[in-house]
Length: 354
Image 1 (cartoon, helix red, strand yellow):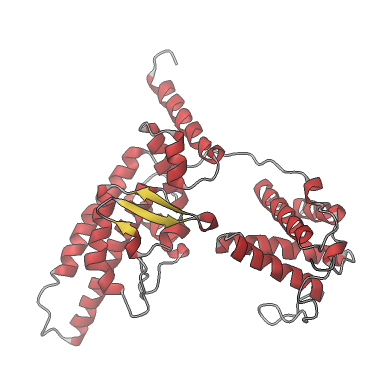
Image 2: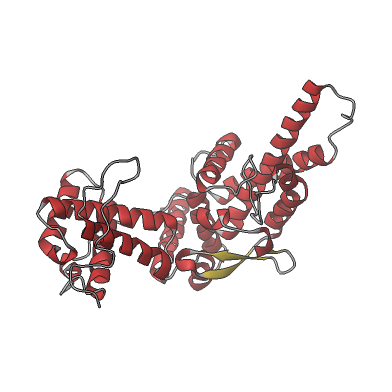
């Protein structure tokens, strides 16, 4: 156990922050923050997004405490935690943001207490802010059917274009360049169709889809192995249309975009690298907008839609929980509320005495 308030590496200078600015935190708080980040990545196996959010929150907390005279972790108490959250509230932070920042603070103080940097853990005194659960936004089943039917047709045309590009061996340089652009566009169309099909078929998160390797899809068993939050792996069923779309992408689309640096990634960007979450979100928004859907949504909306449609189709809550990778059934429970609300809406519209 290290001395309270003296995390390992305390002798290191604060050093510059990204962008060249000097870190305003004293060295011991810098070392504590770095240790916390390593803990989140290595021991908790949290997603990069969550690690960034939590370390950003704790940096803000430590900078606030530093302005209050705190120089070492053992000077952090419930007064600093509460005043920091009060400042966040006064600045207009949303209720969900405050809840996350409170959770980050409790995680940090528990970590610091276990390391011996805090004699007592002030985190439990902070309390837990309950957030209002909002019903997730979902597309109707007929909307998803129409979108995916259009993408399937576009994918078939794109596959033919890539496989049978026409006679271009004696084409001019300009024509050859145009053909290359057409083949790239066809490959992107195949990829986008496969991306939306797989999102809706499996309900996986955008980070999970982008992290997939081609070998994780089992076409014979119709399953995909997904590595989710906390580095936990689960096997998710995949429908035939999604497998068909992915097979077309692998056969005709991926080879057009692949480079030596592509590795085993299932989905690629136009430059051959692994598809990133920002591009995946843009794909979903653009393809849904092109299809003329009433509701604009992203990958998480497709996840919500898949879960809701599963429950509407008779799937039990436990199965949906396992498919989505939720650690608690309470998280999955919200989709039953969506189904009930949609049922009540249909009842009010259809029943003569509603």
